[in-house]
Length: 102
Image (cartoon, rainbow, N blue to C red; front, side, top):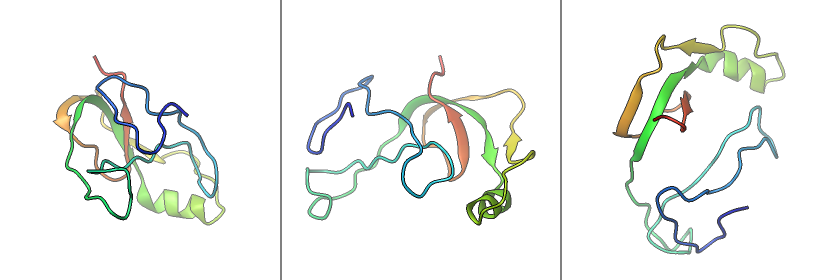
């Protein structure tokens, strides 16, 4: 892991690797931005991502079915056509993004 609990991070620093461990259906990254090193004794801090490409959105109903043991199959991702580059924003829930946007 590139970042340890209590580390301060800077723009461009690797936070970690995407993976599929534990009770998950797909590789993903969780992170929490907070005012101090204690998860319970710190405040969550607002943030935006400098830039990312919005590739599409996961179909929530199909994802729910997959989480219940079904297959994801086709149609899981609803594409946006051309992947728009978003600046100073946050992806929404179930958005599929590419952080390599230029």
